[in-house]
Length: 279
Image (cartoon, rainbow, N blue to C red; front, side, top):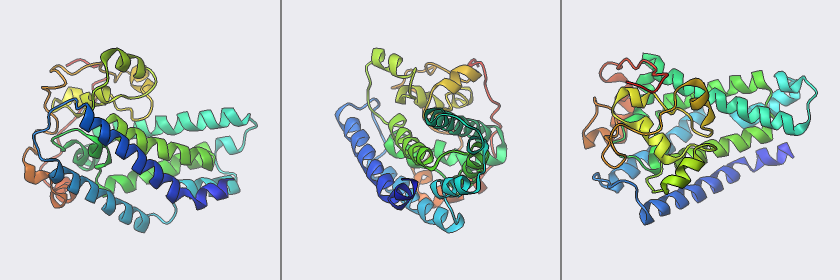
């Protein structure tokens, strides 16, 4: 089963990517949450161009990716869950939760360490917030993130099928929770107990550092609530809040060449983690 999944991994991932992207883009068109002032073609061409660059460089830099590495770990008996007797449902649940917590902690680290923030701020310097923002990451961050993920798989012993499910979910929820579409407030309050919603994650893209250092979750919202980094709403209304980073505010900064050299431009702002959600 795992070998079949691995053989079809590119098709599975591409199918979910296209489907979720199209769905979120349609919702953005039908029920936009915020009015966008920057032309969509300018942002989408550069953000999606970055996806192509990242995919090529990741394949070039990392000889084995997450699902293939999970198969190797299973074969070698690496990881905690490959060496304990647990029901399959428990192994799958614990694997998914452990991987999601790893990504949450990684995200916090990329904000807390100035050198890593230089890489991660490429994601935050988008001046609008929509489905393509969820795909806009610097190649060096993508490579480091994959290294952390491989280390986590080796320690956890995650089954390959769960790694594939997690990878697909992580990509899908990143596009979903960056979506510029309106969810009725009552439904949003309910959903954010189970999944990170766009209104929850938009706070994280605020220009105010204390708001940027909140709501780090991508898949599950529970880590923010449990570890004190949850913030329900921005200080300004969602329609009026300013998106981005104060250092990079021009449309020229949205071009792919500027995104790629951004880590080497200007100092890394110190971003102390705001654990209680207050100023």
